[in-house]
Length: 401
Image (tube, rainbow, N blue to C red; front, side, top):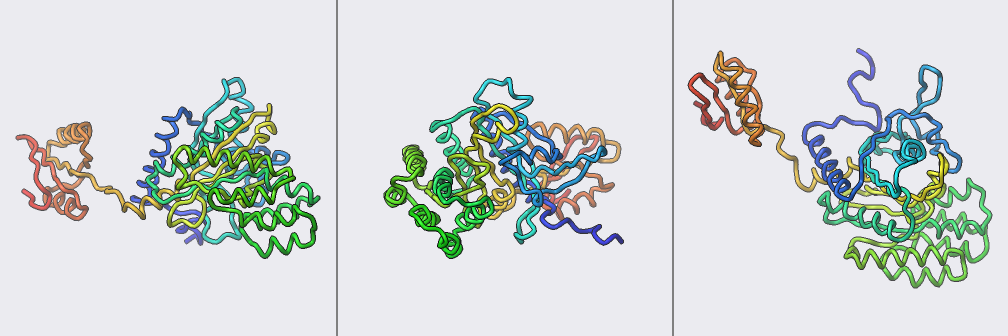
């Protein structure tokens, strides 16, 4: 027997029955919402050229991607991200479309997470991208839509955390950090690793270094802003902080105050995002299930500069929450249709009639009524329809004929 014939690769899994059903349900809930809000679906290839994800200033580290080559020897990857292929689309096939352009997707991304035990390398994501729209109205729409997405997936205890990447960028620009140190600091702040942040910044003097030490601790409600305003007074970070406060107040005005908080320590990829950044969390899942933000410079790497904002929902995580909170949906048909010998075609017609009327039904492949009854009882099917030359007879599978 081949060594790996009966197992799945690390970071992947099989989805069976109830898991597959709730995954489909989560996808349907999100699709329905996105379509109702005017977004149109696009599907990008699962295989892309490596160059799509290697644009200057926005590349994904090559060690995170699953790589292969085509018959010409060109390097290709399994799609590690959905936004960058959509940026490619926007710059090519969609360049003549009227802006703003509203797109949504539901597809799998692949990423190697060798140092993150328990993380999936294969994740189904449903997301939206608003292309060609800048400013407060677009940011307000997308952050409120993020909250609505989790609400639509029947998550009662969720929160959306918002931040602004411009605050971090403004502070670090005065320190003259090289790219490697800057990225290390970003990771420490993102993880709220206070000792590591302090140790790294102790070698730098000045007001900005002191503020950066405090940055990962600045999270919560409206009370975050007075302290942040004092700390950032006189720096280039004042403007993005003011903008963030305006957005936060607008979200409160929209009735989302109980589920939206501020976190100045959200510093998602600084080479990717340019403004508002946000994450979504649900009860029972320790990591974010939703993430997004504004990325005004990305599409320009493929063609014409275009402002953009979007977010993605981890469908697998939401599906697990639905399964945990609501239990498994029934996967058994309501009725088993069994044909008397010679009535098989009539039974197939009866099956079609039931399905049209909204009954879930299964055609019995057993040769005897006794075997059909035994099967129905074992599977938990409620009703058996016995099709004979004299008509169709319905009985409880438990009672039999």
